[in-house]
Length: 198
Image (cartoon, rainbow, N blue to C red; front, side, top):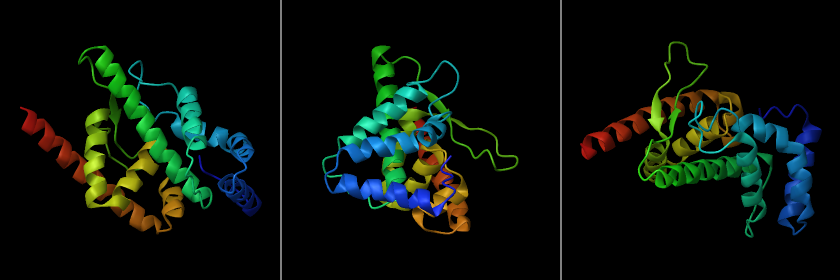
């Protein structure tokens, strides 16, 4: 969880990101040590259910770290921006592994994930194909970039409404509204794609 409980911790993480941006490659290693458990908690449960997981939690976090370090043009402004970029990296990694798994099985079983909000009363889990979801998110990003960010932060990083609001610098009410709207648009897009494929 992204629960950084003190201003000192936020300042420390932001300081490491600034040092990394200014060329201190070792700063990312120090940062990774400080946020590893948070990233692991965020990744857990976000990559499929049961035996149908495209990548395990530890591998996802490590691969995300490598991608974040390898970004030669990384311009992390602060902790909030770092976690936004981490969410995008995790999304791409999970989808890349899902695509590879389907290709290896020559069109075998798709990886399904549940796009739901555990906090919403009466909201049943909705299993969707991860690759189709990624395609729908790419289209959503063209129409409404913030809605796409909300999905990446809530679904791929597992942030709460409050944490997502903090990262995006909007109100919790805005995040709740955006999450509902994004899910509705994604499900419409997924239904259209299925209908169009028939």
